[in-house]
Image (cartoon, rainbow, N blue to C red; front, top):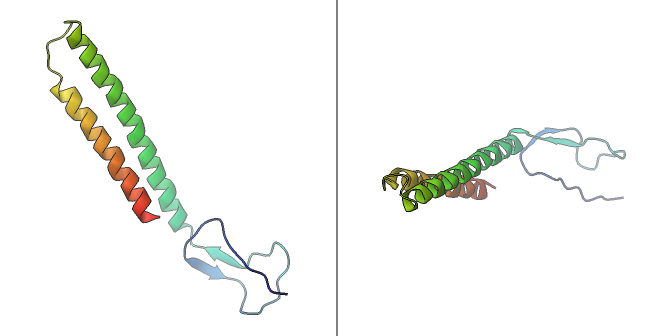
Length: 103
């Protein structure tokens, strides 16, 4: 009987426990994938999530600054808040592109 084998993650095989045409049993581990591949992806996903959280914070801060200026509660010095917001937006785009291009 021939069986097609697949995996839920991709990566380099770090250990092969069987040879070509070997007889195997159900649930027997026939190969191990190097975990560094999906561990890097997980790390990249965490960095993207952190960048998105920072973007959300910067959006709130920019809106708050804008509201203060609109209500004349603050001097119109919004360039720092807007620049920080744009920086956070760029960081999210960079992290997302890095994640997309890597996988």
